[in-house]
Length: 223
Image (cartoon, rainbow, N blue to C red):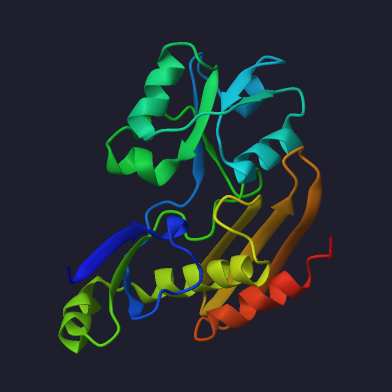
């Protein structure tokens, strides 16, 4: 095997020996989306409505916005979770918008959750291509797939996650974007019960994205 393709948000921040990140593809929309059986967005859900998700990050931010909602554990691929929703296992589910877009199911979204409401997982919406560190021939082949803006943004987000020693299931959100030559990032750290530990914001150099991620991680108060 010469290459491995992953959703970047699921890739561990600690590199494996002999393997490097060969390319980060152009990023799909990184936001989360709510899919409701009854239409409408998060604010339209009735008190006590059941929202399906097994993500602690999503759970923390949903509870922060709507403490009256009931979180229902829900796993599986996109089609499985939508089928469970349609069968009545819950009143709504929260999914990565990128997954809906790639499957042509974006019309199922009843609200796209912007960063003011829910910050995505670090790396969400981007694909990562790994290669062997010594394989220079494959490195050259991957160059046209590599998106520098997506790489800078996701590198900052993943550096934030790594500096907190937070795994991909921890209640940590981050979103970085290159704007007017600067790298801007917003961050969230919470508890599953909805308690907000910290919200951060900062700007940095796209040429040194990890520095911005580590700086914002250093601003998070110690537990």
